[in-house]
Amino acid sequence: DQASMVFPFGSLIGNFGILLSFSLITWIGFRMNIYLSIVLIFGFFFASTFCGDFWSFFGCFGVGFGFTIGFLYLTMMYNNYKYFPNRRGLIGGIGMGVYGLAALVSNYILLSIINPENVKAEKNPKTGEYFFPEEIANHFPTALRYLSYYFLGCMMVGAILVFEFQEPE
Image (cartoon, rainbow, N blue to C red):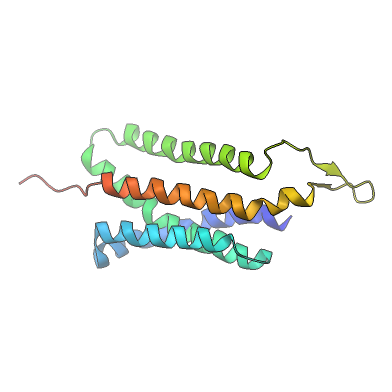
């Protein structure tokens, strides 16, 4: 039951990261904000794969990763809006679609690593709770580690391809 609060809390705390993103850009610059965010996102995501208990995982993944995702999210949307000021709805929709596509792809990557044989959960007759065999749970840190490398690669390619909008002279 505790695990179900990681994603909603990470999304909530990401909104605070969004609020601070423009201040961070003003302070360190657009490009440095991207690089710092990539390092922090990868660092928190990767560190969460070594956590031995739920609360340290919650801190690394839910709080750290969630917060730093906010640094990039609105920064990219705002930059895209500057390039297409008359097409903000279209650009926002494309941005949200890509954001959702990343979650869709990540889900299948994780599934193929964590549970490649598609083992079904078993029901405990005494408690009525469902659980997976221990070997499935043991694949979780490795799967997150691989996913963190995948995200790092995607973010590095994105950092190379993004250009801050410059007002025409």
